[in-house]
Image (cartoon, rainbow, N blue to C red; front, side, top):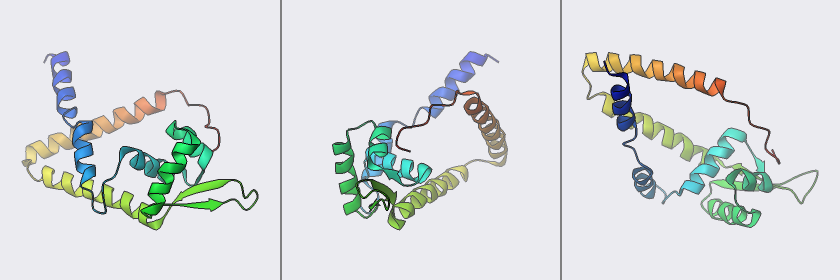
Length: 157
């Protein structure tokens, strides 16, 4: 076995999903097109919970004015909502709505359903081999992330 050749072929197989193909899929999402920035906001809020507008802007690496515009559009679609702080009414926190959570769950479920349809195309030997490889990749990914240095805490979180 030529390890480098096999690694190259595996990387080619995994790299077939391009950002353009992901964008094509998101343009036809039920309820309207979903931009990458909106998807990023949904993912950040799902992971970190409600955030001050300034903290969200910092994580997105945009100005607070840009973050406000992004949140405005997402709020119009019912994906996020703003809350004023009880302690300091000047602080505006952004949170997912039930509709935003439903969208995230729907995306995960659709991905799982599509994956199930693809896996149905494999014969039993291919399926067992793929499971073995997927488990090995999961272990390697877990180890890789454990070995990464811990980033400093984000401001505004």
